[in-house]
Length: 267
Image (cartoon, rainbow, N blue to C red; front, side, top):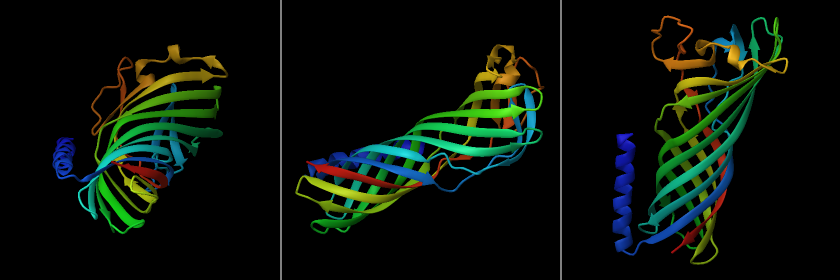
């Protein structure tokens, strides 16, 4: 985190210096869609409400998938070199098939909302009208909403609907893009780019927010240990039902590969 803050501060100072040297500044808008990349899969045990089941198979997934909308501010220090700081909003849905021991059917849908902050170095060919460029930098998810919804047919309890909310630790990842930019005039350019993101986050906690059996709300009947999970590197708790149970923290992939279309407005 300290390294990321230092990077942002350095880019800010360079941007100020660049503005004093009459460097060309711009605002960037983009929208696109990202696909799964560098997938991960979970295994072991899974609690569905009060019951624990062995996970026999879970489709691998990456949770960076979905619609990306971004806003950036940058400075071209020269025709070939620039700096940009971007903020992206990500919204996605991942559907997975999961097979549990003793359970006939189980489906898992995960809804992801994330805000990402990225300082990047921009390298451009600097040609008139049509430019090739690349962007490389760091990526920090400053906000992640992660909601899981299970639907299952349990052997003794019938139809189950369960919803969970996960919280994640903060970690810095990498982002890179390559594309081409077409200048319509001195003030406006349109760009199309391919973007890759590589990042994995560890979960901190998991809270059960909804638990229904055959359409009847059963959440209030569950203990704290059945409703809450704390993810740790080493399990130490004694299994008290009035405390959140512990589970080993396994990194979850938020990597993606996407296509963006956008425009730059120059000042």
